[in-house]
View 1 (cartoon, rainbow, N blue to C red):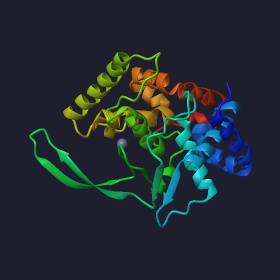
View 2 (spheres, helix red, strand yellow):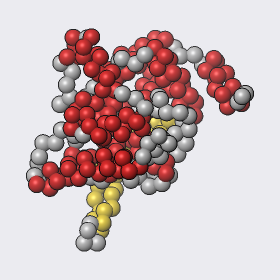
View 3 (cartoon, rainbow, N blue to C red):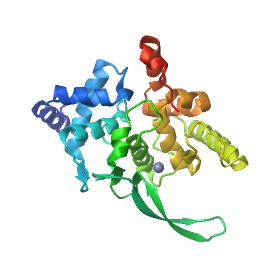
Length: 272
Ligand SMILES: [Zn+2]
């Protein structure tokens, strides 16, 4: 069936081809793309250009947004959606605001006793239901390795979570998935992590303890690990890895294992 949207997309891509030198720089910068097939990389390059067509990037003073940086951001954003069926998963926002550094965000929190606490929180990214995605540029630039950190993936996972309402750790699942399987996997890992931290708040957890804040952060943080430290996530919470693999329809763990088998430099790649 002929589709106007698909036609416009093809026309846009034909008129705005990927600059091979720029793409090579992006690929060099983003080790987490290693091991993707040629088809996947081509698709990712297309999606990244469409992302830049559809989203508005606003840079605050101190952020120099050149073509390389724009593509670097868009490529990380589209890695989450690489195998998701349509292009509309980021419908919930139009703008990304880039700060030159971590920023202070006023927070309000109501504790179980009903007392309201107000405080300033320093953070690298922020996502709200209606608002733009806010990212501190150093976090965008420093993500990209297999090192359990990726600000873009973290914040955009929140946006996926918010597609069906509040951020609660439950994004819209595919038809071949079951909410009960998702909830069981996520809840038991989340509870386990919280028990560990309740016993000892200084406990060394394999997954960043920020995940224990609430189910939304658990989904965002484990999504980061899924794409950038899949071995750690799989070893710690195999069922969470399994559900995320069903949701993102990707298997970064087998990609990483293949890289570790075939490339000596990957044998030392271990997240801290
Ligand atoms: Zn978060």
